[in-house]
Length: 304
Ligand code: KIV
Image (cartoon, rainbow, N blue to C red; front, side):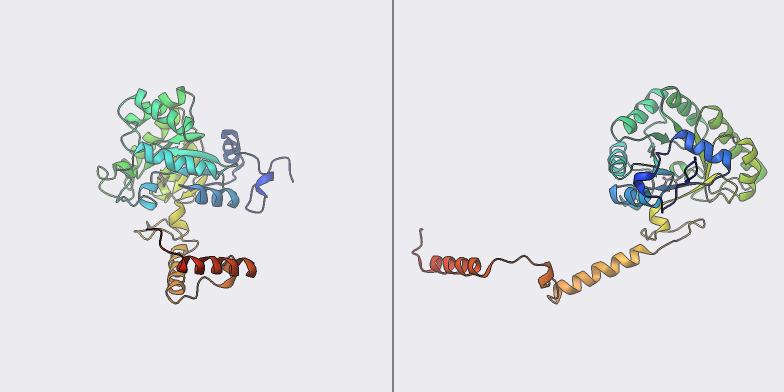
């Protein structure tokens, strides 16, 4: 193995080095793509761990994919902390980033720092992510000053999708693109360690990349960014809601899950399950004694 370790799914987890801020900064410098995926619980995090990804985001997309809300807006801080703590238990190597939910950081710098601290103290996150430019830039700066790494998020920011005209790509005119660029540069200047570009034209990402000194992670932002992120349930085909244009399905797990549970239901209904292999047994003499004792009970006078 070279002095600098190249992590792949074939690298045994025991031998992988923990991903740190310097790891991803170095990856950017070397032009090595950064892999990020979301996870919301122990099993999804342990899959991400075993697959050898670099960054795991406990995204507020979990509001929809695992909690069944219609958007990311209703998810509470306590719900996000529970998901993040569960994901933490499935991870050793990747950096874990907690997504600050809508309404938990916008009000003031003090609120933002307190919320970020809860992700670190209670859920074991290494960093947090927040959405938008504007007032979020000051929130990001305050959290960074409090010693917690922050990832920014510009372009389509689902927490404020209504104000953006819905879940649609952003920055499609030069003027609108410049707003996205200005948000990104302001977040970079505020000390963010990385930034997500969501649902923006490839031309925008390509044009802005020479100005972005921190790792840029794209989701529906074309190939120019330093890395890519996808939602776990989208890429594995677990979530049956609408999939955005940028989603590539690498599996159709939901179909397999439905097929598996349907086969189980059928086996229970036809008594094909459980089979002897799934059943505990007693020694024949113990079973005979048990039957005799139960039979004796039938003949004993009622105690009532
Ligand atoms: O919540 C989420 O999953 C996200 C990613 C799509 C970046 O914010």
